[in-house]
Image (cartoon, rainbow, N blue to C red):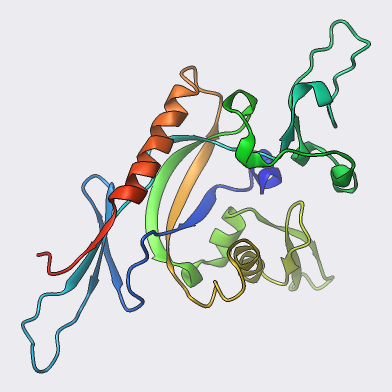
Length: 238
């Protein structure tokens, strides 16, 4: 989806809520300055009509205003794949190379390094979180699927049937939502769409490299790690 970020067509991302509340849970609200999400399960029965609901209180990994940097599949500067670096030109400077900049038929030519290992100094895409919400995965609308970076590539002459795809991949379908469904299952495994989990929906805008990067990026990453450790499922919380 890096191509969609570079093109400015991706302004949303969905991430699993962890830990995942029970399947019958219902989302209640974002609380405490949107740092927590609260879910509830109505466990009252005919024999115990006064029972307190079970509550799931989950920390939000990222918050509005957080600055994130995107890790990409890359090569070190001296490899200069798909770049304009010319080692014979004294005024040309080596820089990191990114697979997203290469034609797809050249991807197999180079020994790319996984995005997981991309250093902060190679970052070129910076995102600022502008809104957060919680919803079920399958609640995604066609408009939101497009905001996830799904793009239309062609349409029939009558203008009613479209072909959508994920840029830089072989994923495509006849609607934005079903295309996104295929993308989700490719990332999370077969059947993951049918589970219909709760997801964080982050909206963001692309920004210039912050003057205080990488420190500002480390703040968001540290908070996200703390959220994974600190989230809990509690019972009988009023």
